[in-house]
Amino acid sequence: MFLYTTVHYHKNRVVKHHFFRSGQIVSRHLNDVLQAVIRLQGQLLVKPITQACTDDRWKNFQNCLGPLDGTYIDVRVGPFVRPRYRNRKGDLATNVLGVCNTDMNIIYVLFGWEGSAVDSRILRDAITRTNGLKIPTGRITLLTPTTQMQKDS
Figure (cartoon, rainbow, N blue to C red):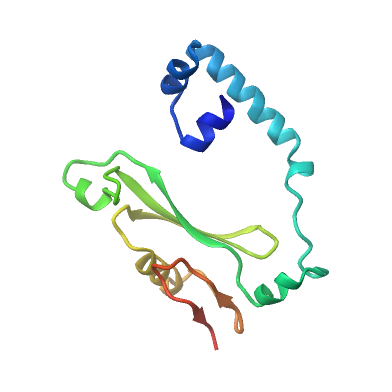
């Protein structure tokens, strides 16, 4: 049930019909498995030590800023702004940009953009804000295909 819910992003109601269980049972089992995963995160999710990495693939990413990606979060908005918040799948959502450093610590989050906004526009806004995303000199940002690869020189 846990994998079915998390991988396919199904709601409790869909899962209970699929597995012929009550909503309370589904919710309890999902919470139990989630708590177990959280307790085991130290063993399951080991952070890489970037300074002492011997992996040959790492040398290609040494000067990169870190993971940078956007995601959608479902929202409820008024009827007059709904077209702006409708994403390509037709859902009402806000676009959130998140940036991590190479140690997987979150260093920047920008939220509030409407779901129809393109990634390059959101990134440009994040970089040009007064207290926005600062890309250190000499660092590279590798982005999704909808944006471009940039190098700060």
